[in-house]
Length: 197
Image 1 (cartoon, rainbow, N blue to C red):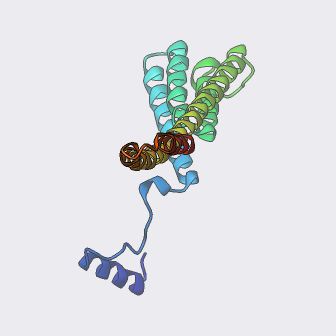
Image 2: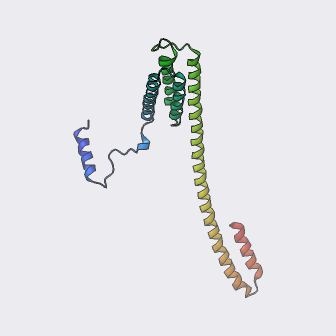
Image 3: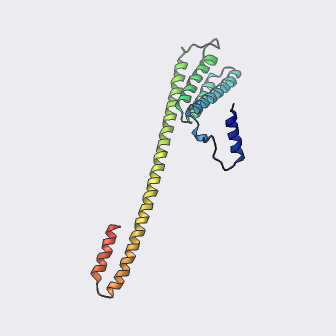
């Protein structure tokens, strides 16, 4: 709950449209922990929903295992490793608790499918988040390279404009010099400015 001073500051800010926000935080600056926590929560809800549907359709462990893989890939595509690993362990837990071990509603983690599922889910999570991380780094490098290229193009255009002005000045002098018979000086001036461009 906000105290009175904070409430009055918020009220003043709302009344004055041009004032700076007293709590300047962009949505993209949210703390990484909360984003990861939200992904863990959403993946748990998705896994619970798939488990409920597959369990109600009378023991479909293969379908549940494949749908769990889809959820893990979707979580991994967010680029966060911890939520992807969390989703992998929850998926193995759900698979074991609801589908593999007989009687149902018991955890054993002794079946071969448990180990295979865990390895497959963790490998998928690691590979997808790793590839996504590489793609993001490559994209950032591409943006930096593009900015450097644009900057160098601007510098080169400025140099060419400067050289163009110098050549025009030399050509104007050449025209005046040729009328006086000083061709060598005009050519030397032009070559000098071309070499310095």
